[in-house]
Length: 246
Image (tube, rainbow, N blue to C red):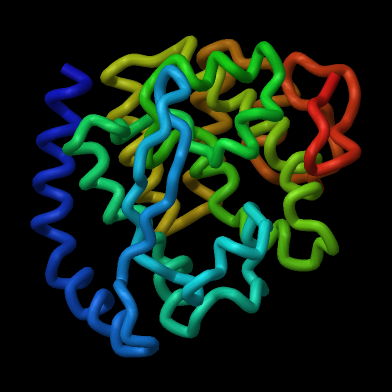
């Protein structure tokens, strides 16, 4: 049923989004005469590398900088790219990966290999399922670019502030996955566009109803500032962007 939902939603989504995607694709091409798509290698289920299709929001060659995490103020983002990122248009093209079976509509977000190599033993469970376009963490950290905007090292800040909770939310989803939860998370993702506060409150209530740890519920509400925290399976905060947490 999950795969049937994925295929149906991906087909309908691509058809409905095409009137918006096509002119934006033209604008991306027009600004520098390069492909409107960015093919991003990501780690999928069972650690298989797949080619994720994204609507390009950055300058050509931006991936050669060695920086994986992107802040809202990143100068690699093009003028059209800011519009794409604001409305998450770069994620709509990933419906093609859903059709191919590389991804699911709902599941932990796929990561680059450089980041998955840093996963703890506990975090590696995130690679046991198809990655998704959205999940709990996609809603809770929809403002990831803003969180990293003023950080001197966005990758280190990601590993200290976001990854610990993003991984925990992904693991909680895996252990509570169901078709009903998938439909709910899709609806809450749409609600995020209209009212992020209502979406966050709904996520926090859902986590509480399912017996999530209190600290995870608090983070989901995003009423408190994020502070460095160890990722799941570790006892120390990540101190280097290339270090495996212990």
